[in-house]
Length: 137
Image: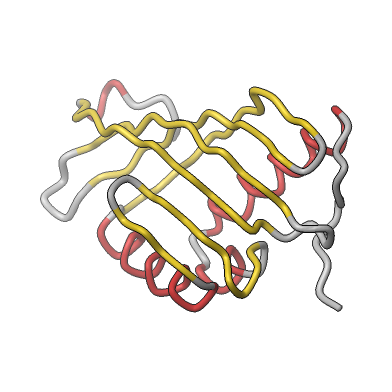
């Protein structure tokens, strides 16, 4: 049976650990690695995209990191209860033309009993920035 520790129900220590593990995985920019944290039938809303299933997540992330170059992410736990978490994040990237962006957002996460993320709902806004204004280098 597939498990991703820590398992719910979460306490402060395990919730913070889960968020850090997610941040580390996403900063790897490895769709295979990131996708292993999600159930095979995971449900996502990412901006205006609705994504269903681990395989679709892999394809989405592959495309994301082909367009969002030099991606660097920071996540912060905002709250948790039993098997759910609220997380805020910001990340920076540049596009192919060299324009830098900072993206801000919030995610709501729901985990199954094995610690795999069953649902991920993300609201994200991008803001163009100058390279000199980057926070994550």
